[in-house]
Image (cartoon, rainbow, N blue to C red; front, top):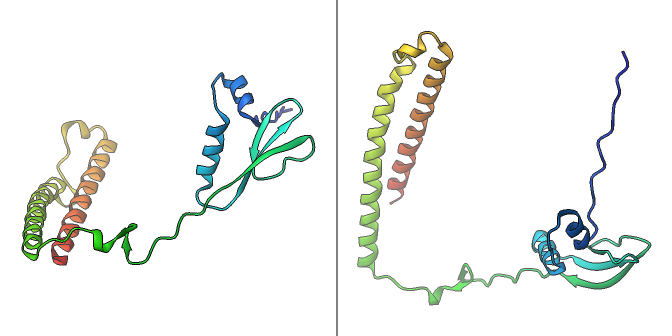
Length: 179
Protein backbone atom coordinates (compact mmCIF):
# COMPACT_ATOMS: atom_id res chain seq x y z
CA UNK A 1 0.00 0.00 0.00
CA UNK A 2 1.47 3.32 -1.05
CA UNK A 3 1.13 6.23 1.31
CA UNK A 4 1.59 9.82 0.26
CA UNK A 5 3.26 12.15 2.70
CA UNK A 6 3.08 15.88 2.29
CA UNK A 7 5.30 18.38 3.99
CA UNK A 8 3.68 21.05 6.13
CA UNK A 9 3.69 24.55 4.64
CA UNK A 10 6.63 26.77 5.44
CA UNK A 11 5.97 29.29 8.21
CA UNK A 12 5.39 32.83 7.05
CA UNK A 13 8.12 35.22 8.12
CA UNK A 14 7.02 38.83 8.29
CA UNK A 15 9.95 41.08 7.56
CA UNK A 16 8.26 44.40 8.30
CA UNK A 17 5.20 46.11 9.63
CA UNK A 18 4.08 46.72 6.05
CA UNK A 19 4.01 42.99 5.30
CA UNK A 20 1.87 42.46 8.42
CA UNK A 21 -0.45 45.23 7.22
CA UNK A 22 -0.67 43.66 3.77
CA UNK A 23 -1.29 40.22 5.24
CA UNK A 24 -3.76 41.05 8.03
CA UNK A 25 -5.00 44.54 7.11
CA UNK A 26 -3.92 45.89 10.49
CA UNK A 27 -2.02 49.12 11.08
CA UNK A 28 1.12 48.49 13.08
CA UNK A 29 3.54 51.35 13.54
CA UNK A 30 7.29 50.88 13.54
CA UNK A 31 7.46 52.47 16.99
CA UNK A 32 5.07 49.83 18.32
CA UNK A 33 7.23 47.06 16.90
CA UNK A 34 10.38 48.59 18.30
CA UNK A 35 8.72 49.14 21.69
CA UNK A 36 7.51 45.54 21.69
CA UNK A 37 10.97 44.30 20.82
CA UNK A 38 12.50 46.33 23.63
CA UNK A 39 9.85 45.17 26.09
CA UNK A 40 10.31 41.54 25.07
CA UNK A 41 14.05 41.85 25.49
CA UNK A 42 13.46 42.80 29.12
CA UNK A 43 16.46 44.49 30.62
CA UNK A 44 19.05 42.62 28.61
CA UNK A 45 21.54 44.85 26.87
CA UNK A 46 21.07 44.54 23.13
CA UNK A 47 21.28 46.75 20.08
CA UNK A 48 18.19 46.76 17.88
CA UNK A 49 18.75 48.09 14.36
CA UNK A 50 16.36 49.13 11.60
CA UNK A 51 17.19 47.74 8.15
CA UNK A 52 15.49 48.44 4.80
CA UNK A 53 15.72 46.50 1.57
CA UNK A 54 15.34 47.75 -2.03
CA UNK A 55 11.58 47.09 -2.07
CA UNK A 56 11.05 49.28 1.01
CA UNK A 57 10.46 46.55 3.59
CA UNK A 58 11.60 47.46 7.10
CA UNK A 59 13.22 44.92 9.44
CA UNK A 60 13.83 45.42 13.18
CA UNK A 61 16.47 43.00 14.47
CA UNK A 62 19.58 42.65 16.58
CA UNK A 63 21.26 40.47 13.93
CA UNK A 64 22.47 41.70 10.54
CA UNK A 65 20.07 40.28 7.90
CA UNK A 66 22.77 39.99 5.23
CA UNK A 67 23.06 41.29 1.67
CA UNK A 68 20.43 43.57 0.19
CA UNK A 69 19.58 45.36 3.44
CA UNK A 70 20.79 48.81 4.42
CA UNK A 71 21.08 49.87 8.05
CA UNK A 72 19.13 53.01 8.95
CA UNK A 73 19.25 53.42 12.71
CA UNK A 74 20.19 51.46 15.84
CA UNK A 75 18.80 51.64 19.37
CA UNK A 76 20.37 50.23 22.54
CA UNK A 77 18.21 48.87 25.32
CA UNK A 78 18.84 50.22 28.80
CA UNK A 79 19.80 48.30 31.90
CA UNK A 80 17.59 48.78 34.96
CA UNK A 81 18.98 51.28 37.46
CA UNK A 82 20.55 49.58 40.48
CA UNK A 83 18.38 49.70 43.59
CA UNK A 84 19.84 51.83 46.37
CA UNK A 85 20.81 50.06 49.55
CA UNK A 86 18.76 50.87 52.63
CA UNK A 87 15.55 51.20 50.65
CA UNK A 88 12.31 49.27 50.53
CA UNK A 89 11.25 48.88 46.88
CA UNK A 90 13.17 52.01 45.97
CA UNK A 91 11.69 54.12 48.80
CA UNK A 92 14.01 55.35 51.50
CA UNK A 93 13.15 53.90 54.92
CA UNK A 94 13.20 57.36 56.48
CA UNK A 95 10.28 58.45 54.27
CA UNK A 96 8.03 55.57 55.31
CA UNK A 97 5.32 56.51 57.83
CA UNK A 98 5.93 55.70 61.51
CA UNK A 99 3.28 53.82 63.49
CA UNK A 100 3.00 54.04 67.23
CA UNK A 101 3.42 50.79 69.21
CA UNK A 102 -0.19 51.03 70.48
CA UNK A 103 -1.54 51.37 66.95
CA UNK A 104 0.58 48.39 65.82
CA UNK A 105 -0.75 46.29 68.72
CA UNK A 106 -4.29 47.22 67.67
CA UNK A 107 -3.58 46.14 64.11
CA UNK A 108 -1.99 42.89 65.27
CA UNK A 109 -4.99 42.11 67.49
CA UNK A 110 -7.40 42.78 64.62
CA UNK A 111 -5.33 40.59 62.31
CA UNK A 112 -5.30 37.78 64.87
CA UNK A 113 -9.09 38.03 65.26
CA UNK A 114 -9.65 37.90 61.49
CA UNK A 115 -7.36 34.88 61.10
CA UNK A 116 -8.98 33.09 64.05
CA UNK A 117 -12.43 33.72 62.52
CA UNK A 118 -11.16 32.28 59.23
CA UNK A 119 -9.74 29.29 61.12
CA UNK A 120 -13.10 28.65 62.83
CA UNK A 121 -14.96 28.84 59.51
CA UNK A 122 -12.42 26.60 57.78
CA UNK A 123 -12.52 24.06 60.65
CA UNK A 124 -16.30 23.89 60.30
CA UNK A 125 -15.93 23.27 56.54
CA UNK A 126 -13.29 20.62 57.26
CA UNK A 127 -15.66 18.77 59.61
CA UNK A 128 -18.41 18.89 56.99
CA UNK A 129 -16.00 17.55 54.35
CA UNK A 130 -14.92 14.70 56.66
CA UNK A 131 -18.56 13.79 57.30
CA UNK A 132 -19.34 13.79 53.56
CA UNK A 133 -16.21 11.77 52.73
CA UNK A 134 -16.99 9.15 55.41
CA UNK A 135 -13.46 7.64 55.37
CA UNK A 136 -13.61 7.07 51.63
CA UNK A 137 -16.83 5.07 51.64
CA UNK A 138 -19.80 7.45 51.48
CA UNK A 139 -23.12 5.85 50.62
CA UNK A 140 -23.79 5.75 46.89
CA UNK A 141 -26.47 8.02 45.47
CA UNK A 142 -29.29 6.37 43.44
CA UNK A 143 -27.83 7.44 40.08
CA UNK A 144 -24.42 6.06 41.08
CA UNK A 145 -25.63 2.46 41.47
CA UNK A 146 -25.81 2.03 37.70
CA UNK A 147 -22.72 4.13 36.95
CA UNK A 148 -19.71 3.31 39.15
CA UNK A 149 -17.58 5.96 37.39
CA UNK A 150 -19.84 8.68 38.81
CA UNK A 151 -19.36 7.24 42.29
CA UNK A 152 -15.56 7.15 41.86
CA UNK A 153 -15.57 10.71 40.53
CA UNK A 154 -17.63 11.92 43.49
CA UNK A 155 -15.27 10.21 45.96
CA UNK A 156 -12.28 11.83 44.23
CA UNK A 157 -13.98 15.24 44.41
CA UNK A 158 -14.78 14.75 48.10
CA UNK A 159 -11.16 13.73 48.77
CA UNK A 160 -9.86 16.85 46.98
CA UNK A 161 -12.21 19.02 49.02
CA UNK A 162 -11.07 17.35 52.23
CA UNK A 163 -7.39 17.85 51.33
CA UNK A 164 -7.99 21.51 50.48
CA UNK A 165 -9.67 22.22 53.82
CA UNK A 166 -6.91 20.37 55.72
CA UNK A 167 -4.23 22.46 53.97
CA UNK A 168 -6.14 25.67 54.69
CA UNK A 169 -6.46 24.82 58.39
CA UNK A 170 -2.73 24.01 58.58
CA UNK A 171 -1.81 27.29 56.86
CA UNK A 172 -4.02 29.34 59.18
CA UNK A 173 -2.54 27.62 62.25
CA UNK A 174 0.98 28.39 60.99
CA UNK A 175 -0.02 32.01 60.46
CA UNK A 176 -1.34 32.30 64.02
CA UNK A 177 1.83 30.66 65.36
CA UNK A 178 3.93 33.37 63.67
CA UNK A 179 2.17 36.11 65.64
